[in-house]
Image (cartoon, rainbow, N blue to C red):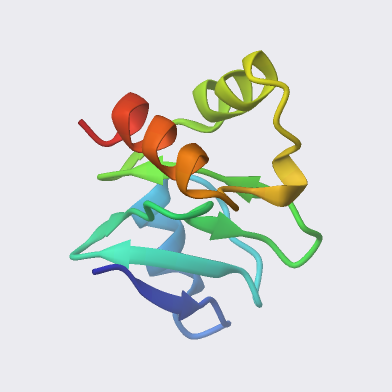
Length: 94
């Protein structure tokens, strides 16, 4: 199961290396082991609201956004129904 880590001054460099992008303090980061990973939402949420989706350390933000757009699902609602979770899991969590 993924663990949420709040990025701060003390761990920012290490956490940024894990995802390959600069992370600001107060960024929420979900990790499984040493990799960014979250199955029920974005694995990186910056303080200004920018969200990035990662599975097993691999960024899939563009693919997830395209998936939501194709189905005309608002990103703001996320995976809010069992049907969405099932379709999402079949596509990304095989």
